[in-house]
Image (cartoon, rainbow, N blue to C red; front, side, top):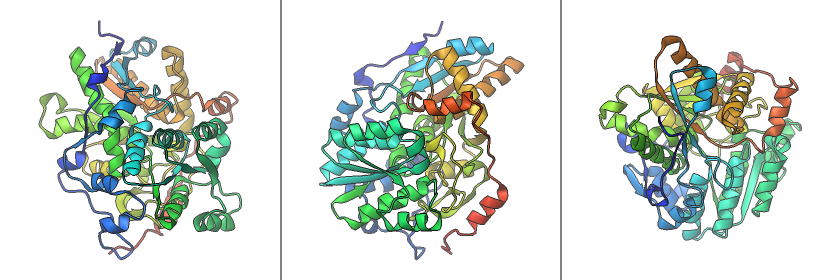
Length: 454
């Protein structure tokens, strides 16, 4: 029988990250400035250190992981690959279900995979302070932890609705020394403008990004860090998929389908990209592989957005990127998967979806919690609300296998545990969670405000 848990040794932590930009059929579209021209590295240097910019713009297939980063990774990596045998039995499916469990990190999620190298490269470049945004708090707590590892103070703008829903994530950040503010704040021009327009504004990731970027751009000793969307973040996250490939090789299996929750795209890209590398190389076992990004129906970026150039933030401070977007002034509802409440998707994920190399699926909120509870009762782990989106799709796939008798091998990324999200589960049990399909007319209105880049 296939073992229930497939582990690696510390020596098997990847020593390079995989850069999928090297294997795209066409080069990634460059970020643009307000004039419609490609942004220069010098302009980006106002908010990012040199080593991060090099990774962001690199077309090299393999980027070395510094030994100092690998040493900190070793506090929790390699992360286990686990077969969800009890879930399989509960569903009565012939499918084999595996999950890469990232809740073993100090912050309880996959986010330190990028937070640690970002803090490391900033410290090496002489940065004195970091700013960032966070939705559900997984990224904020991760960069607070990483900043502490490298002696860097961190200021976090946390989306207001999550700031109120998830107080213990806020406490984690403060424990690791970070300052945390509910966004929008009165500390920045972007925040003050949002509050003037709507004093009860719940905030959004796009707005919190604006506040963090504004602070970083105003101080030459401060740099901005981002937990998703950009190329270098997805690059760092490929440690998940690279480890998973080694783990599958140990048991002589290979996934037929991979599911990952998708907001900005970091966890989906991290688990799927290394397998897509096999497909690009013509590997026969990857020929029919399906990779599916799973997003909320209330924030349907890939499934209902437009593939075009848009700002990465609400106020237009960031470069303009080619991506699937709902419009940078899109204000999503206060769903409990705060990490998925973003108007755009990673340019790399967007390009792959546009080229039909990956699939996308939108699922409603209540059904995701039903799936998360089913998983918890079978496997014991209470998943983060973001992870529940992938679990919903996995269960549906496994039930389809039951109907057809196909014994497909399914892999998904369990991005973290839900120990700091129990208020969300409380709302589910009390019947207070609702489904919300973002109306097409609201998306159309938001898309009217896209930047004009020719």
